Image 1 (cartoon, rainbow, N blue to C red):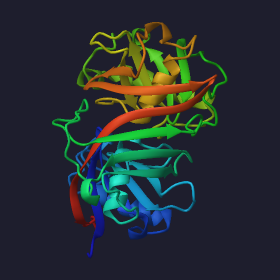
Image 2 (cartoon, rainbow, N blue to C red; image 1 turned 45 degrees about the vertical axis):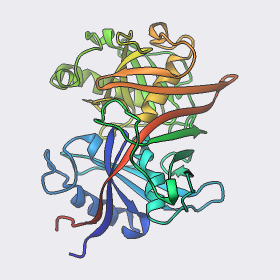
Image 3 (cartoon, rainbow, N blue to C red; image 1 turned 90 degrees about the vertical axis):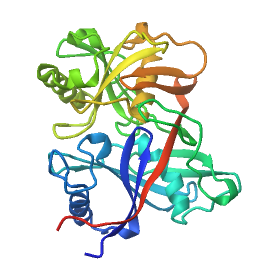
Image 4 (cartoon, rainbow, N blue to C red; image 1 turned 90 degrees about the horizontal axis):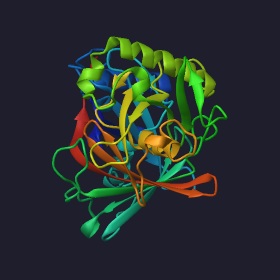
Length: 348
C-alpha cells in the first residue's frame, strides 16, 4: 500500500504513466502484473486505474540512466491493453518519447541546460537513438509555450525529435517484404518499417473515402475485420510472425489530401481507428509515400519542406532526409506536458 512513484504526462497526442526503472520490479512478469493493476486493465473503462479507456491513453514509459556512452537515457515503451490484460514491447512510441527528456531532467537523470537541454534517448524497443531538444530556462523544464499540435487543445512548449538509424528497427529492413509494393488478399499494399512497421493501402480499396471521422470508422465492424485480416497476412510477409493479439503492424489507409496537406490518412491500432496518427507511424507512412512505385505515391502532393499529413484531428508535419537510397534522418515537432507527479496506488 506504499504505492509507486509515477509521473503522468501527455506526450504528443498520447498520455501515459512514466516510471523510473528502479521504481518497478526487475522481473518482467512481476512488472507487467503491477502495471496492469496500475492502469486498470482489463476493463473497457479502466475505471479502477490510470488508463483512459483507449490505446492512446493506456501507455507506459520506463526510463533509466544510460547503459552506453552514445546516449543519456534508456527508454522502454509498453503498450497495455484496455479490455485484454496484455502488455507489449513489440513497438516503441514517438508520442510518449516527447516527454522522456523532460522526465529525465525532472528525475535528475540528466542535468538541465541554462536555456535548452538536449537528451539522447535510446529506444530499447528498437535499438535506435532519438534526440529530444526542449526549453529549460533557468535550468528548469518549462512546459509553457505557443506551439499547437493537432489533436491537443491549447498550446505548449515545442519538443524537437530527431530520429536516426530507424530503418528496419523492428523488421530488420526498410522494406521488410523486399518489395516496394505487394498484394495481400487482393489489396495493393506497401509495407515499410522506418521506426514503426506500417502497412499502407488506399482507402478506396476498402470501399471508404478516407475522410470519414474516426468514430464512424470505429463503428464499421466489416471494415475492422478486413483491416485485421490484411495486417495478419502482411505481418507474416514482414517477418513479424503471427501478429494476432499484437498492435503491430499498424495499418494506414491513404487518400488524396483535401485540407491543404500532402496526404490524408486514417490509421488503425490494430483495428481501432487512431484519433490522429502516431509519430513513428507518421514517419514510416511518409517514408513509404516518398518511394517511387509505393501504394499511395501518386496521391502525395508534397513540395519542399516537411510533409503535412492530414489525420482525423488535424495535421502532423514530418521531414525525411534521404542519402541516396537510405533514410538519413527524420524530424518531428511535438509538445508534452506534465499532468501529475506523485504516488500511484495499484489495484490489489
